[in-house]
Length: 127
Length: 242
Image (cartoon, rainbow over the protein chains, first blue to last red):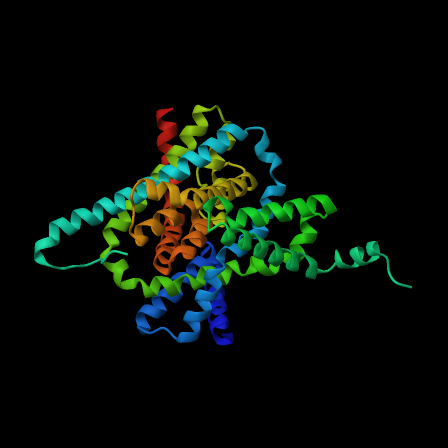
């Protein structure tokens, strides 16, 4: 677990260093994610402790948003002037973006299954 | 010479211990309620925990900075947690490869929808132009969204509030929207939740399944990159027409 946590921090650090040098507008941990992902793909293996530690952290991902959430509500007054357009825009557009991306993806998967159905490459088994 | 309660309070309120412990207690209480309610999405644990803590800070007159001295230890873990998303992504790599093209098309469709509909609805309801610019990147993770808003002349701290609204409302609505559209595939459900409601949507997806979580993490990451490119482009097109 200690080794796994260190691995995660090392990749985050690498990501931060790359972002700082490149002056990119992307958060360092996102680059760290990509680096770790490609490392795992190249190695073709995942150590058990890393898997357990990652799953452990991600199981409680919600917890990690709590401090920022509290901070945001302190700035709530910024919204109060235009609360109606802001609330409506946020809710409508979040539901629309979710619905559109899900429908498009599902439609493309189905279309391809029908197209390739007879050639028998039974890929993408459903969940 | 027993110290009075107010003395103990004065001491505790200056150490990080209190903020950290309060955060963990509030979250576990919120999670307990959420579990007891059969994981009803309306009782989202982030929403409940934040509400409890904001109330507590308000009534004790504790400034946010004091609270954050302790809560920062939890906040810090967002970095390693983001890196940890590589693990479920790797475990789903086989399926991801076969779905590369559908993912890409869904990404573009979802990303454009998020930006255009957010700005469009607020514009129709008469929001100011700095609010519109702050709304445009609201579906992506906070650091990217704030960066975009700043570059365009929006208000970054307003964007942070909008990003949080988006995440919580997405996590609350996801089940109803996706059930309503009869989307059953956990990969598709997760991808849509992460794309539209970033990390909080992703956290929600991980509560459902590892596959949903992995696809949500992917949706969040990719939409962050695409939105950073699309918002300035759409703004140019908008100004050209307007």
